[in-house]
Length: 310
Image (cartoon, rainbow, N blue to C red; front, top):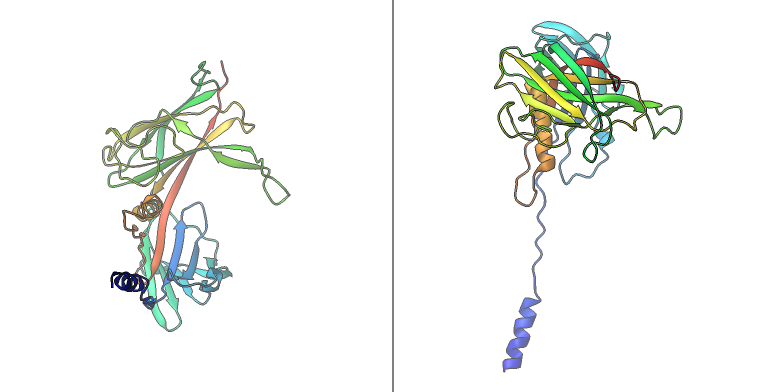
């Protein structure tokens, strides 16, 4: 009797019911991507969104039959023409201007229109700068380094800034005539002010403790603690003794629209989130009637010749 009971238990444990759950129907939406600045002509990329369970070639989802316009209020600024691969470009070769609120309007045959608004912020005004040679320090910093400093003026209101330092160097991956023989390589920076974030993950303020520490390539900050004032940023490069490149550094300070900043922040939070303990962070979108981002930015470039060792 006991053996039969054990056999019955084993048979019950070996039984399982597999229930297949069909995923919910997914309604595709148009996705718009456009980052614009006064340095380039108008350009927009569009495709249809795909659900997580949809297995199709993404290149088949490019949108090629849209009417794309750039507006300033009720005035037409530009009409963008389709160039393939979901990309629409300026028909006039015009570039955006900073400080103007633009509206992107997209019409589809038989479907509701979508639109988005954004502006490229004013360029940063740099009032002072310097670059100093730092000699090697035995056992700590064996190579040549350079200390950079810039002072820039902040305009009143909420602003978002990004700083990167680059050097044009020989491209070690050049294989043919198509690949350029030299490229701009981003420079690692140390010894920079506290409060600057090494990326977009956290909202941080300068001057306050915290923020990035150690080495960093790109610095991001809001102006909550120096609103409307001058601010001084500084940092020191790593060893550049072995790099063959131009005897200059290119420092780029970008004014980002809030749309651009929030979009990049949402992407970074998704990359860094723990899928076991955290929900995915929603990707920022400022597109009404669809998905994606239409966002402006403005670059200010400073060329810094490398000083001699003496």
